[in-house]
Amino acid sequence: MLNIRDAVPGDAERLLTIYSHYVENTAVSFEYEVPSCDEFRRRIENTLRNYPFLVAEKDGVIEGYSYAGVFKDRPAYSHSCEVTIYLDWHERRQGIGRKLYEALEERLKEQGVTNLYACIGDPIEEDEFLTKDSERFHQSLGYGKVGVFHRCGYKFGRWYNMIWMEKIIGGQHDAEQGQR
Image (cartoon, rainbow, N blue to C red):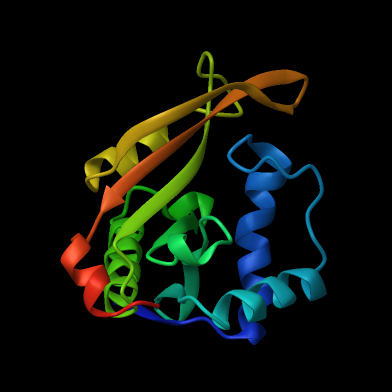
């Protein structure tokens, strides 16, 4: 059974285990070094101050996580946020990601967020480090591509593009009713 709950700083070790695969073996994350557990715990704490950070547990084991963060650090952007998701490498394509994002989206709607943005590594040509799976996943959830930054990420001796994808989850009227 899948349970989605709020992350707590004590989840850092398991979440870092999930994330480290992406840092060490893929260009999904453009980080070169896996952060320390203390640093990852601080990232969770900082996110939880203003945004949801959710984990998905299957049979009591965390198999993925998703969170939101600042899109741009200006008050006028307060109804927009960036979203991120990582799943245990062996649990992809099981529906966990969709459920995590749906739960995150509901929480963000409650906070008055209207626009979601995902920053995604995009291969010039798919390779063993990066495919278009993340773009396809986001498209399946209603995100559309709104921008491409060409050859801006360099990892594993290769250049990668970065794309921005957007999903509108609320209307302007919703934002006008409750400024953040």
